[in-house]
Image (cartoon, rainbow, N blue to C red; front, side, top):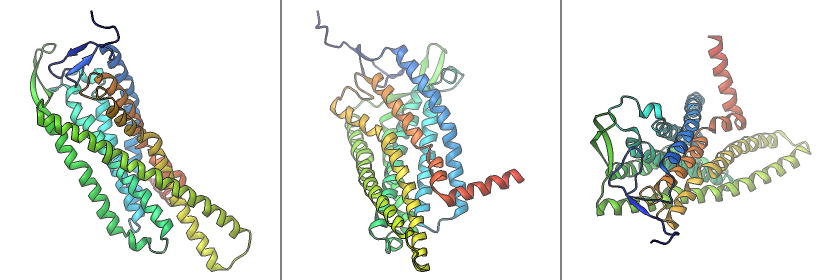
Length: 358
């Protein structure tokens, strides 16, 4: 007899609609029916958030185009909006594939298998892009505090555009290639539907296992942990700067100064509003998007708690919950811009009033 504290491992020979992406499943892992219920409930919540996220990011994009890109920060905000839109779209597709009505419909593919690389893999990548662009925006604002007179030279609109395009290229293309290399699309016979459907198989080879491990570590360190650390440090610096700015303005408002100082005060107030916007975006990412980093760290300390580990179902359930929080993070920026940016709010009101008059 085996020791009762030791988990039985059930071998899985291939991916299935359960779905399990692991080759071994522990008997202490979540039962299949609980796993399916969890994934379904979170999926409905994700679809709801994704609906508002797509609308919100679309409004941000239209508003920023109307405002213009004469400043580097608007270019960065637009890049963040594009990244968030891609993240919301991938996570929304991820959620749809776990809705029973969609999975049981007459489709030429198996949704819960196809979604592994196209939904889970891509959403991880796009969330990483969002992380790095958020880090760049936070760092840019810190440079504005340290070098207020030289910031337009240090981070010009042209340089900002080059940096965000580079971030998109580095974080998306290599990782996308690796993701679609690790999983093979092939036809499988479905007994329930009595026909062949397109499914997904993990490429079971030494090279694939090594590449998967390297990809996992790279995403954990370079795509999640480093930008999170940058955002944390820059957020603290911005918070300290905002406190000093408020103190300075209180002192200035207590005395009457000449017009030059009033102009300086107005510029400081504008910079403060931008800093508050950036700080709000950074805090939202730390509280919501940062949970993905904690999930990856847990996987490092507990190798069986991975997508191809013995506790695959538990991992994927936790991953789905972090996906929901990442989805919220990519969907709330419209509210942040509207509440902290006077020009953004004014432009949105103008557009809405024009539409209603039509």
